[in-house]
Length: 484
Image (tube, rainbow, N blue to C red; front, side, top):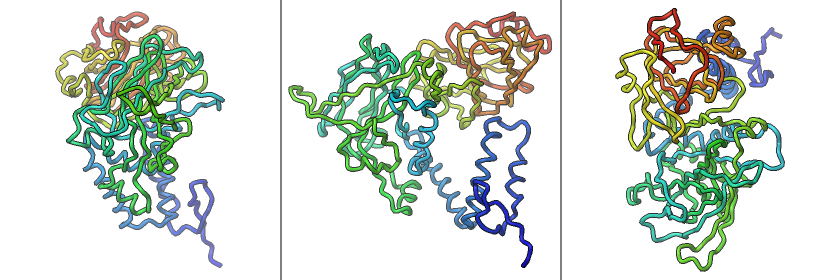
């Protein structure tokens, strides 16, 4: 009997069959990652590569099959624009967004009660929906459909007290199953709106009882569903983003219990606690149905104590991606997003790179927008080394816009710039274009760039720094007034 070396093909390390392929190939690919790689990518890529390579080996994927998958991704990219995200739709029908949603927002302790469950954002959210008054209707130009009064409260998950100034961002489809950006016959912003609660935490507005609808199936997502012998239908639902100062925001949906697709959602987003009953309503000429639902939010402090993941006070919506929610972890966050240079804000687009290119002095951030009356969005051009400093009252978010890479040195144990200078960094984060990093409040840090780099900063309005703000003698580029 010949001596054949068996290779581990299974993702769990088990040998499923005698390997006819190079057992060292995957390790070579993993080891090609350089020492300055994005830290998060360096952490997750070995696992991703092993699973992908093992999948191909176990199923003996051919070149034709591989190219079919590549062409599907290319087609999804070509079909995507500001009104349609086909790539996200493909991941939705594979259950990936719902799975990541569960992972991101899961409670570390299995509490008997919990804040309102989350559900996927989906591809049809639009930033800057019109602000409306309580009691307004989000329905425009539609006479058909079951008009509904939806109402309830936004409550503190721990205390049960109402939350003032909570914002509810709402959107759903028309009776024809289309969102307004899909349908040229619907008025702009139809069936969308933002409402802000008062001291009683109550909200109420008129909408339509939603209908089930097929996800767009004229592209790669639809072709994949057909190949898998699956339907494209989603059960009737209404989308929400609910946020409030000091609280962990949620992205969620509520689903009509009587919808026939409640048990087989094509994107696997239904959760029991989000299933609701539309009750007949009498005595209201504006509505045939009534829907009552309370949303429960956890404060940032409560979220941290319970190990909830998904948000800190550095909550930014509509920048770079459809929505960014910065994770709350004890160590600093480092995450990479697609390198889009456009920041959609204030009903117009601001090209971050173009704004950076107008800045003539290094380390002089320019304010471009105030976010929610509390946070300042700035752009800056940096080069050289900055001084050790911290912000006692706010996290500080850095986003690499152009140039780079640049790095941020962190001294997690120091309580002053002098201590940080003496101890030196105990962690260094490298950021390339498209990377975002959040420095926790009060942490001593020092950004630096060997080449001219454009960055975006987000921090609380009126942010001040602790410690001496003298110029770092190692660079002539840093003015004494920088960062004050």
